[in-house]
Length: 404
Image 1 (cartoon, rainbow, N blue to C red):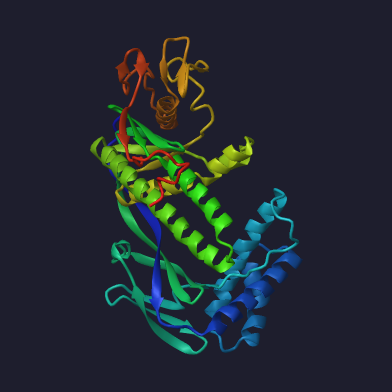
Image 2 (cartoon, rainbow, N blue to C red; image 1 turned 45 degrees about the vertical axis):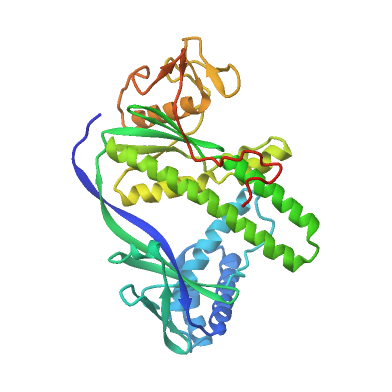
């Protein structure tokens, strides 16, 4: 497959800045009152339209809160329309029992009339009921990349005593038309890719890491009686677990992007948004799979790909690990994680999954590729992948050896 040319795509990312300074707590209190009043009105009249909500409540709320800049009413209407739409969907699916949603968070939505950002001076000017405040932005290497990007909406967030400004950025990125596709199969303990030149399995060891920290948290809950002390220790280990897993995710996704760039390939992922709806295994297995953060690694890969101008596709995950990529027949188990077909194919289920993902993506583009053509690497009659390991060396999660 070869398609030439380039196109511009808008990439949107969000960055969080810690604010050095204080904002009157009444701003969060007033905004919460406005949002909950609007939610009550939206529920009573079944309003999901921002325009209608604004038309019916804007003047009334402006008179009730004259000291507040008018665009706070505007953003509150936007937020309520979004919240109520989501609430109705969840209600129809039977996932909420409440009659109406309630807004409890210390979050204020800002538009371009309510804040100004200066990434050269690393400061933000925010309009409040007491006038405009200039606050310093605490930043790191990640935030540096957003210089020159266009700013959109923002959210002022209060967490305990700390203030954060979350800003939506966008910019145009040149996307080169790909010549091929990488099939990426995200699994609990590895990420396997099918490229034009072969298969690679990146071992993440996520299952061992998650299980090790799960066992550690259980021990902490049993030994530490003080609720405050227990919460502090648990938070510390949660952060350590998150950082270890994220570090592996970033290393693996960087490798995948390098391969995609070298082969001028798009990246194909499974749409796993509904995977947890069908989990009906044992209690232990359900808990393990719920701890698996498959969406996170996909999000990291997607945003890095977008920044690099690499296209990302999502395909239907059904039957990617049960059908033969050569003849389309049903695969049967042949040992631990190995599948075989009557046509002679024998391969690891993750290799089969990544291969089928790649083939599905090519079919989405209307490209006909013989399934039996590369990528493949035969060893002793079995289709195998090159192994690249990022898993921790200590594999005994039961004695806590994975916990630093």
